Image (cartoon, rainbow, N blue to C red; front, side, top):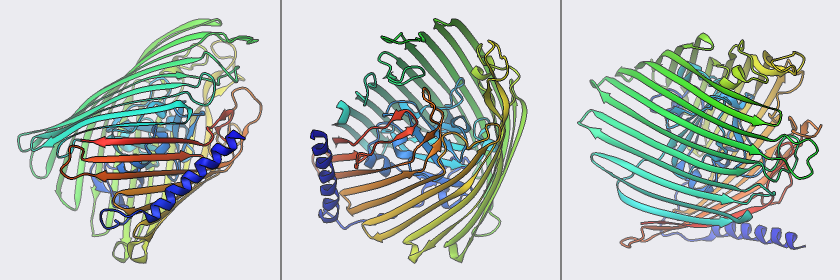
Length: 637
């Protein structure tokens, strides 16, 4: 009875938020909610408008991040066409990104343009990545190995940090909500003629929804830029996270009370750019990314077949790149680059079933070339190719071609792209003493896409549609029918699969202060080796958003997310079908600006997720949170 009253209370609170959104007066004229054409860099490595890309590109803006006030990165990526973000339960648990039917290891994740996929897992767990100090997230769908090499079979997700703004400013924020969650942030920034800097720190803790589901996460992100003379610029970044997480559900124990994960990461990087002439630019960059994992699981009380283990993994990823860009005019931009990458991992595993020790490293050398050609107005052609020489996979050649053409003064645009991608087997896949296979070959994908974008109603509306097809071969899968190193199976290149479908998106400015956005993805997948759909990919996925901006001071948003069923891999049960679900989330933010005061801005934030209190799972056997809220305040000085 008390729970029902609580649900009703939060539904009424949400209704008040949106009633206020329609009626609250602002200090100035209501601003239009139309989305500007953002500048992106991930699709071609050079700054261009998103509308000038032949590949499918989506951008999560700073405004969206601030309005949603996410605990971790996955909360802002839901609803993007072609992108699947699925969490193992509550925030802080494992969470990966999959694009167009690919695996999590087929998505290359970058921070500030530097790759961060794990040398042992192949993917990057965004469950410990906060977004408070990031400017935007760029998502490029389709094979991108012609630019970025291994791991970019399905696409690339680039988390781009904030820079210091003009003048000096400090701020802090505090919020609290369901599951005894507490979130705190602080920042200091400044900018002038010689450069800029920004330092940000955040902390978040939550008890989660189960016993042993608690999370604590601390993060730091610092960026700085310095202008060196009139032609050169130096950019630097330092980023770290420190997480402790209880794991309430694992193999053999549906409710584990003492399984614990500790994770620490630190990345440092720098990028130097100089204009040799007006038409030639040189740049050099380098980074080091270290991660530490300690996962331990003592025996649980009453456990019939305990699997007791203590696993310590340390990884280091290094990336160094040098490139030159030549742009004699608006018609052509050509750049040529070389890149060196090295991955290293050590793993010390102790268990009641035996002990193992692993230490290994891989390296990759590559050369790439890219041509951005604009032969006529409203026409763009992109051609690229990359050759990788990998210590484990030999030589790989990956080309890509893309083009777009605009009609009707830019109101109609058609585009198409084709490319090849690959992924080198990870250190664990090759060296693991239980199921590893030193003879593994790279996974390969060839992707095709064609689409169109149409603006209508005088620019108030936009429709986009994309057809895609991805063919995978040599997928690395576990085969229990072969003996393997320990007699119970081994990883083999046995998989062939395809993923095809349609991505659609529509946006319409209903009034100057109200915008409606709809996205839909249909995915038809098939795993030939398994004789079934690809695991973890829903056939249908849709999102409907209503964004209200009645004044410059107030913003509110409602998201309705819908997913159909999917094939899944249960940890403990026998059911392999995860039912579909839907949920409604609402967000709001109100700002007060105080001219001439010590406090430049005060903001109140509020969010309610799963407003209708639906019971559902994003991954089978991992219940998602019911209705939950967060309320907070932010102060800028």
